[in-house]
Image 1 (tube, rainbow, N blue to C red):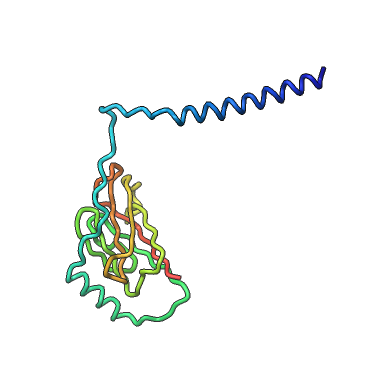
Image 2 (spheres, rainbow, N blue to C red):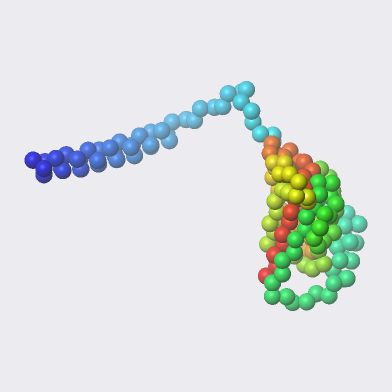
Length: 169
């Protein structure tokens, strides 16, 4: 009797597994339901294009590169903390604010091959920063700069303070 019970248990286990897999396939094949019109949708993301480099930005970038002798370093890490209004709170680099949520941070060395990490943050130790998003990329046409874009949680460009780390290896 125990052999009969084991065979039935195994058959039931395989049947349940087969039905589960078949049921999952049926659920996937059905069309998805549309969200109600009144459901809140996040705001449409704006363009991810960087603003054009200004003459002043290009001049400052060249000055920063020529002021510091380019030397081969095994590995360096540079940090900068930027306030929401585009002023540098501490760290290394020059900050240029282009528009709402658009910043350029220039350094004294070429950073195009670096690793960039940023997070929304405050310069002081007072409070938790507002929720939001931050994106970083090498600055187009400026080899010693990083472009930073900040947005609120809805995806709308917003002036938010941030912390940026650039690692060169």
